[in-house]
Amino acid sequence: MSDSIDYFFHPRSIAIIGASDREYSWGHWIGVNLLAYKTYGNVYIVNPKHEFVLGEKAYKSISDIPEDIDLALVIVPAAQVISTLEKCADKNVKVATIISAGFSETIEGKKFAEGLKRIVKEYQIRLQGPNCAGFYNTAVPINASPLAPQFLKESPVAFITQSGFVGNSLSIWGPPRNLTIGKYISVGNEADLTVTDYVEYFSKDPTVQVMLLYIEGVKDGERFKSVLKKVTPEKPILIWKTSETAAVKRAALSHTAHLVGSQQIFQSLIKQLGAIQIRRLEYGLLACHSFLRHPPLQGPRFAIMMVGAGWGIILTDALSTAGFEVPEFSTELQAELKTILPNYRVSVKNPVDFGAADTMDFSLMVKIIRKVFESDEIDGFIIANVGEFSPFDERATILETQIAKTLQRLEKKYQKPIYLFTLMSEINSKSVPLIKKRMNMYHTMDELIEVIKAQYFYYRWKSKAQ
Image (cartoon, rainbow, N blue to C red):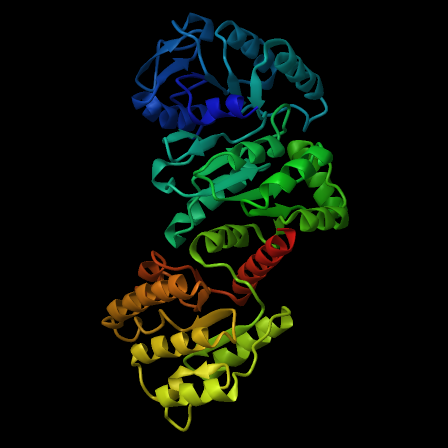
């Protein structure tokens, strides 16, 4: 199975069947992107209506191509897919990506779906799709998706999805936030290869450290369970799954022909297996990168430091409501912190109100973090308002970027996570995009808590499983 899937991500020869000069079409998007792969392998255009397409010679049929083909991209009407794949067999095609829709998700397309099963059995061509949005592998790179190359950045995150355009959306949304996807595949209707197959494949890929899954339904629950049981102790798997309302079931069935199973049973299953279910898909991408950038969160105790008591109260409320702790520091630790921030207005009980110290000497912040981490009274630190001084004074941009470098070193030294919270975004603060090159930043209470919950669940489960 893994050997077959590898032909998608590292093919020696590609045929694009249905490549087109017509802009805003799948044949055009994918054709343009895949022609860039010519540095690494041979790429052939197949289009029976034109002599040249996208500036390249066009073959009337895949049968006319002068060599065997590893990967075929099939972008033709559903009624032509089966005959096209039969011709692919003549060229010893190993895998095929079927962009075409109109199979199991429609009543009239079910007979074509049966034909696809026959193709797999008779010719041993492994299929992605149908009704999928392609894939990409930034490490090669190969881009068989409609996405423009500037959105593809190398990353240890793999995204497997039963909704193609969701993958496109996240791939565009993520990079400006320094949240990238390195390998992406849209599984479509899963006539052959399934989400589980790709999870198993990426589990053996040393460049993939964490996976994000969008799931509407699972076709073989026992195999899914078996694969996750092997993979989750080694690599975090984050899952967003549709709920089981009647409206969602109807939408999923019309989309990819997946029957949405019981949410309660699914939640219980993946919890036992150590996979992480997330409430919102974009939080999943944030959480994926939190596993890459933060040390493990080993316990529920948090310290908070902020500028202004209000954010301390808000963060304490959010953490406490989510089941975490903001414990009062010991008398000994409070006395030590008072020597660093002697101003009578400063509260050092936890949260620590840095703003009340009437100083913006951020070297004092570093001293506080060191003392708190060395006390072993907390498991994680949340710092609010870093990134919020640049809008007041552009000189603060340099200072805040330097702070991020120092905080990154402290995380590494003490092996405890530091989470940065601010409402400011790339639009509001020049510091934010520079800080994000070093550390994750969280801009809503929901996303911060979702990331913390994901990390706490996974590392606690892993420690018990070992």
